[in-house]
Image 1 (cartoon, rainbow, N blue to C red):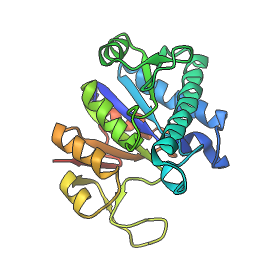
Image 2 (cartoon, rainbow, N blue to C red):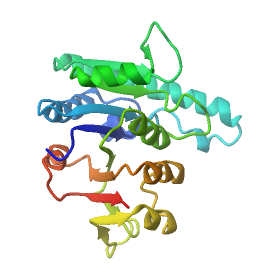
Image 3 (cartoon, rainbow, N blue to C red):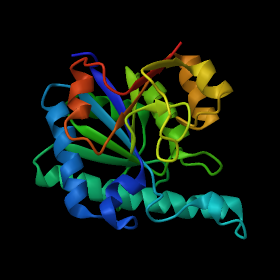
Length: 233
């Protein structure tokens, strides 16, 4: 296997499926099953999930930014709980941890406890982003990856990898199979936000971008196949 411990970044929209909003539980179950195939190989899996299927903070320009971000965090918790339930239905050991304390719902995030869960073969789903406003769930993914000593951040997207321009709008868009952090930042390719990309660069954590809508790609990445785009030094 190419990686032993991964941090998988899922957007909230992925859980919405074709609905585009809320949670499509059948789609969530499909995703959980693909992740289970990876966990069954012995890979330790941490997951940061977004909340864009419920709330997008930056689009609410008339609301206090911090308040809007806290609302978004609640969206990530709903997604984390739904994903956690899907794993339970598949009989996958799982723990949901949140960056904001809510003891009746999930564990509060503690780095050493999260690592211990991973070492015991449990999937750990992280909700609430970093637990602080003004930071995206991309940044939370980079931060959690650094904290748990993940080998890689695997970023799920709706396209095959990183392109020089939007492939949905430009037929001549070119996909990169490998690109540096600096080029991503300089070209403003929006793989992850600049804070997340910079943190991964500083900590030398590669970012592997793949198409989550293509079945089996996550497992192929773990087995070392050349799919998607690798961002590294």
